[in-house]
Length: 190
Image (tube, rainbow, N blue to C red; front, side, top):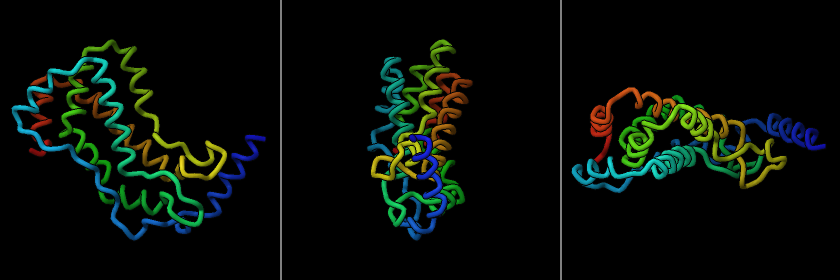
């Protein structure tokens, strides 16, 4: 029965298409929020002050925040949901690269990377798997259309953001702490 309901909702969403729930189709894609400005010496001093557990939490929170800044939950087939048009606009506007650049300049994100850099690979592998999960499930996954889920377009966009940010963490691990700080300085806004 659950499978039948899931298939029904999936087919309903396909039949509805992207344009019919196009609340924000004419608007620009959402902008990724930035942190409150702090002086550079204050930021640099913070980079070494985070525990491993806090670093894990910070990276997870940042990945979730970047997803929810771009993709919104809710809507109905008649309007207000994240559409394929929204996704295409985000991707064609180099939204993924903008998110990556914001993360490189995020004190919380970089603090987390530095804090967890020495964790064993097995633990990192588990964390990477957790961080790759989208925040909002699809309506089909939930078995209903409602305010606590998103469309397939929203889910795929969240997945892309999460995957790219986990890849960024992995790439930053290749650098020394000093090189990570340099990358952060190049992208941070003071």
